[in-house]
Amino acid sequence: MRLCYILRRTKGNTLYLTPFVDPKLSNSWSEDEEIRWHASTGLHTHEKDDALFTLYTQIDRGVDRWIQDARYLPRLLISALVFLITYFFFSLAVRDPIPMIDELIISSALAVTTAVVLGRRDKKGEVAMKRRLVLKQQASRSDFAIEEGLSSYEEFLDTCSFIDTIDLAERLALTGSSELPPLSVPEEHKGDWEQDFKQVLFHHFELTDKALYARFKQAAEIQKGGSADEAFAARLVKLSMQGQIDLPLLSLMVALSK
Image (cartoon, rainbow, N blue to C red):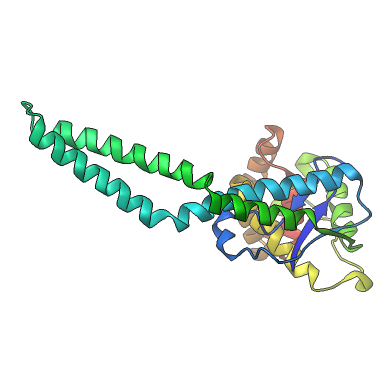
């Protein structure tokens, strides 16, 4: 079973986190594997629609990557054949004052064009369309379950959202007098889902927001080493003021990494 998560925010957009975010892993996606969404409370219709739209978009990207990988060798061989035929044709049939240069340019251009055309055709081909349809049908049958433990993460995000930007940056860089708010899931809500949620969350931002993930790695090292970093705190404030980084999300990732 594939587990997906919905994380609501008072300030900011709702996060839809799935293990389908990485198109490189599309080869391992099973067409009959069940999919379940976890949320802290029951979902509204538009939230279910957004969740399914997220899945459909990721499935499209994954199937495109899958068919490109599956058809790589035939596409390479055909493109190489086009290059050789074009090169020898122009070498023997067309005489020019600069040998090889024109032939190489024309042959390379035709080979690249062939590869692009074949790639587009493969994406719209019957094999890709069938896999795309089957995966989307499976996604449309997703279950939606309540995982009350997620509310602890949502409350943490909300708390951090109301902390002053400078104060939160200093807490992350260990330059202030306060620490990050406590983050703990009640004992009755703990379970194996916690570790899976962390992996899905971290991998999501590793792929979709490299700047945030890079700052997370820095902040995690600072928290682990216990060494305050004034320059890092100043950088976080600047990035946050420019809208380039989400400090509450960064704080959640750091808290979960401890």
